[in-house]
Length: 128
Image (tube, rainbow, N blue to C red; front, side, top):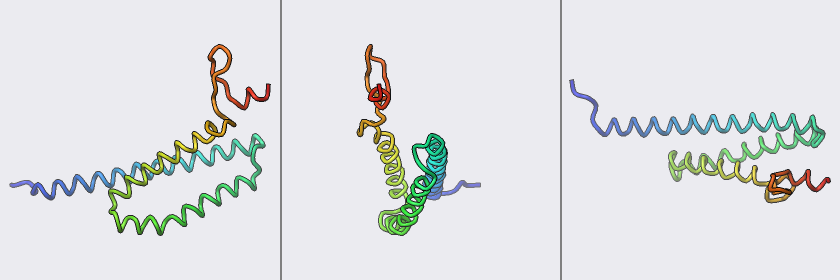
């Protein structure tokens, strides 16, 4: 009995890689959405945001997510699935980094060196 041709094996590996990338990105997106709801509850409990303001955040996410579906489908048709998955993964990583860096760049929640080179939250230092 002879095994499958090399071309079929290579295609199967490529398909498996794409499926694995899709599963990984799907898990990442689910993780990000879950983190947002947990953070939202903490922000509401600490009285930093009202329920209405957090509802606006959730609604904005849903609207942007929905509006991006058609351009994402078009982009996939133009550049292909593999490149689109790579672009989405890179974009997700960059936006997660930017979200974490927002407090750093604005100075509102950044960690800065304090006396004796200990790190303290900038917001805590400004309140003293």
